[in-house]
Amino acid sequence: MQRILGAYSMLMLVVSVYFGFGNTSDIANTATLPQKLVGVTATAYAIAALCCLAATWRSPRWLYALVVMWATLVVATALLATVVYAHDVSVTTILAVTGACVLIVAPVVRWARGRSAHAIT
Image (cartoon, rainbow, N blue to C red; front, side, top):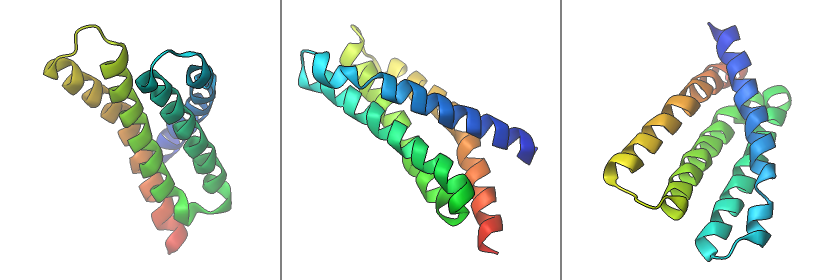
């Protein structure tokens, strides 16, 4: 199970780097400040994902803390993008986006917790 979580986690972190740095143009090319903020938070979670990938091999003790920061940025970016770009935002939409993001990032957090615990002992 840990091997499957590890593969899924690496995939999610690499995809985060790809899509996060793919949104850097939003910082300069959007009209409103909230839209620019979506680009900034996407770039921030890409940088956090890079740090997580590095910590996987270089410093597993820091991995859990970095992954929690990455997961928080991913969820925050998704919520912010929903509020900024959706035409009709309801509580149901916000709950659905939050739930979907948590389901996506939770296995990565679980994997990082196990990997960090093994590094400490």
